[in-house]
Image 1 (cartoon, rainbow, N blue to C red):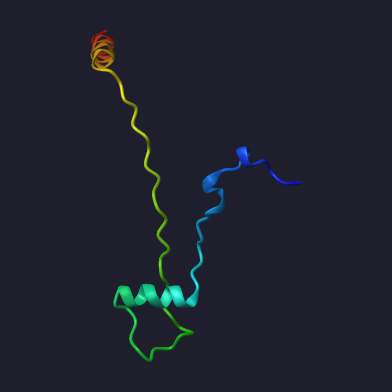
Image 2 (image 1 turned 60 degrees about the vertical axis):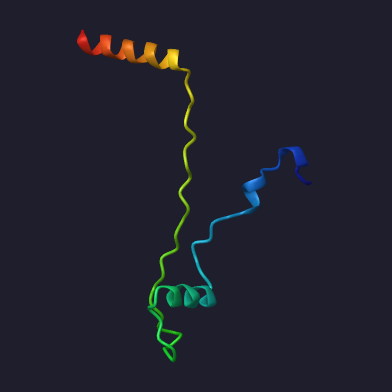
Length: 79
């Protein structure tokens, strides 16, 4: 049975891979200038897989709400 299109997650099909292919590792090593031509392919150095960090969404408050919230916090600290 298939999932209805309205219930699918758009980003669900894109997964982070924690293993690189040999060609990807070679390309990364060449970028970092850690690969010498004619080197042994079987004894390649390890390459770190960078995972993108997710950015948190900032909540936007009105100026009046910030002033009221700031005043309440200051009163609580005084007590």
